[in-house]
Image (cartoon, rainbow, N blue to C red; front, side, top):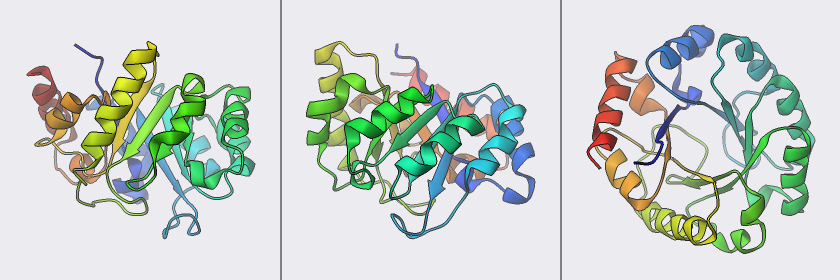
Length: 221
């Protein structure tokens, strides 16, 4: 059985008590903190930056998975690495030189991820997949939480899973957008092993119960 990881997105947390929300979700059984960074240029929303990452870093030993939805992307990468990020992922459209950006992330001591929007082709992977630690498939168009899952993402997940397995690579395959208790098993069957869930966890009264339900669905595979 794959090592499935649950990564709550703090985009859906209560920012008035963000530190408490992070501690609570980790205590509820989450594996990773997913940290969505939006710049109101690459995506139509504005969220949080390195100072918030630095503030939450002492609260947990769990990995902080920073998803950069910013353009240009290179300038901000060292700031997030210094702030305590463990994984930094970016969109190919946000980089002038994708290979260089991957190298920059690794030079900062972080794992590197590449993110694919619903309409972004996977051909970028033909040239850089061996250098990646994480591939993130967006199952919504980025910018806002609480959106509905786009089913076509399952085909992308299947394709990327084949690419990873055929090359014998150790790469996390992450899904982000509309992940819920009732569809997480289907997504896992397609090949994902890391699941970003924002509103599906943070909009429920009992984080542990929700995460337990997700794990129970995965355990049946």
